[in-house]
Length: 427
Image (cartoon, rainbow, N blue to C red):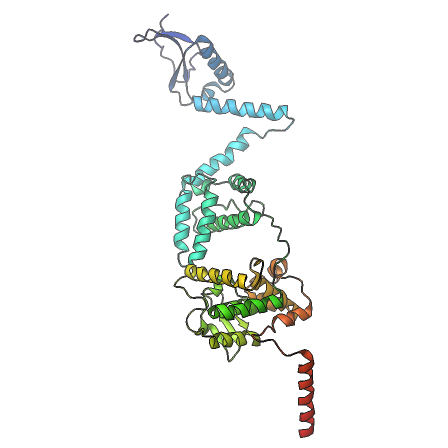
């Protein structure tokens, strides 16, 4: 049976759904065709290999056409979408859960598409973000690029950045943790992604920050690793013996609590020996704000000892044309000194954490110590991640580690008593 020519119908008339047999004149094979009008009134034809397949398709279309008339005679993509939705709803009902309405699901998705059309692709946004941060240190840029590259690997970088949803970010973070990435690393990646979208919002490249609504990553800090005063003495005396050039950097790290990146940028002319202050300039500081840190007598003694051992007080504390080059030098120094000093390990950020812990014990002034460390948000970070509880006398011991061992306490007390006696007699 050959399909009869389609009859012309009125504009709003819905074509009846009837499978019609059709034979291909070239191959001689017989097929079944179904004709219907799509949502725009355009006639659509679909060919099936059997009558059963054609009837199944009609059974899918018929209820929708009956309920929504011609507007429901959608294209095949829309029909398939509705079928998937109904399958999902049936599964939710079977599981005893309430399914949201289709409108509630589609509305935010359509809004995302609208927003996304006006924002650049994620990959382009990242490149523009890097370009804006070009003045930052090479170490900072490398860290940011590494974190954002990891973040973007869980998304489609060609899609508009504005279409990234909270659910996408949550799924990416969950995948990172499930893949074995440490909570601290995931936290750093989340922070970098937050910074990216916050930067984009200020420039109206995206309307929302999808990272903002995600749960913060919880990190168990554990016990802060610090050195004892005797270990500090072993470190500095070993450095003075095998690598005098490293002594100023290590001493500043221990007695002023500078950040590792700041150590790599400091110059000898940052020392004001008359005022006994170390100036960490805005360009050197991580926060971009200058600060002054007092130089205890022990630090000055170690700087003088390094000079006497042949370390010229010129240029940078850690030589290198760039931050990365200086970091390489510092890394080699620490490796050499650690073994010679008899240390089994070197806890993360140990000298800075040690300074924070012993300075708190010595001064009992957490706000001042936080300012010396360059913490802009008060003492919360100091107390949560930097301070290790230390006895008060150990604080004094840390800041009295000198190149040569101090005289015994009895001898010092005897000399002090002698000076007082002489003073009384002369008076």
